[in-house]
Length: 138
Image (cartoon, rainbow, N blue to C red):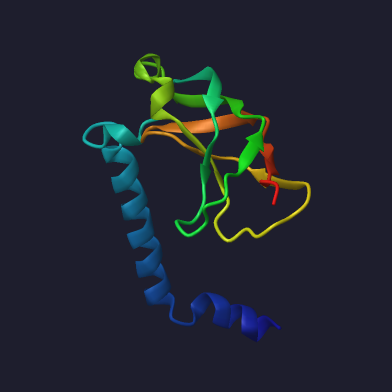
């Protein structure tokens, strides 16, 4: 037991010491340059903004000519981003969609909503987070 502990520490000691020193230097370099040249790494204050009445788009394959519908047709999306740029964000910049590619016929199908936001923004909440898919009558 003691021999294995000694091996853990002293076997390849100089290689382990070199790796440790190198890791410390990399860590110091990253955190020292973060404040000056890499300002984008700093956390900016984030604000939230809610958009209501965003239409849900349906994505289906090109071969699928059925006219799917979803309920509800509109959702509410809360996004988060930099407090300086979130005021300029428009509802048309946010995409809300339901992916129905590869879906055959199903009864009472519910699908999760996918939200796409511009770079620098992230969606925090979607209300409701899923929609009911209504298939066309045959």
